[in-house]
Length: 347
Image (cartoon, rainbow, N blue to C red; front, side, top):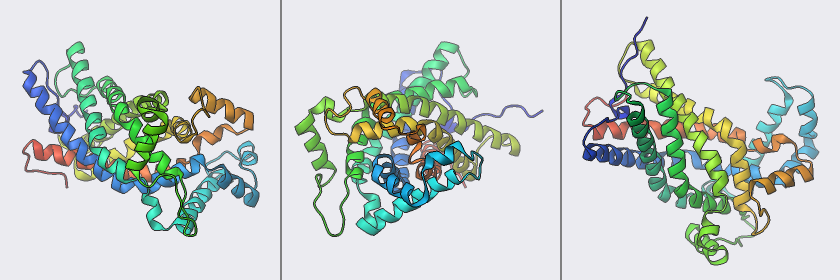
């Protein structure tokens, strides 16, 4: 029987050491996380634009249903892997992407990207800083040896990462979603928001700082806290499984890419429903959803929208998540190995 192998140096933590060592680890992870967020944003933003459009554009779905039949009939029929319902969602994903390309051009896939690109450094730094705090807190309470493999530790660390990063991610998501939701055709170039900073200024001017920036904060917490718990558990377990198969103490670059993609994809499946609600809340007119998530669900029931409405945007989200998450963790591990002065980088 193969014995558990030690963690990578970038995943090892401190226990009962001097506070300066903890701060050093915290800063290293924050720097690595900030760099990783930038790489991930560049890779994943076009898919995110398609996802947001699918989540809020009811007209797009009605037009598609008129052409190919209502989706709810398929839900009551075949439910297997090859169900026509599944292919319809893939079809509407391609139709949505084609519509954006035809009406707005290729650069429309990157609309709203500047703000999340610039702000990806603080929120991803906050993610890994929060993960470090949660991880250290669990080790202190449970007296777990440093570097010991523990799913509970990964879960608590992930929860802390989701909680702390939500305070920075919520305002960023608000601006990003508003920019992605507005459409500009080649024949009509008038738009409400001229860019991310203009959008942020208008939100502050008309809705105030707290309500404007933290609209949908509750649903953001509901989405991000379990999302990162799942993410880090799947990521660390995938790496551990790969290391055991090779009888190695370190993960290769390919294994990190695989683990990052698997972690992100699994977490995405569980977080797409609250993400859809969050998008509707954050792009709504003031007063449209006074009770946030409850108002959105009440409106869906009143309109007779099926439960599958909550999973709108899942295909582009999954397509986006694997490469973006793979690049996210690969970049993070690469920088961490460099900061640990290791000559053997992932290959």
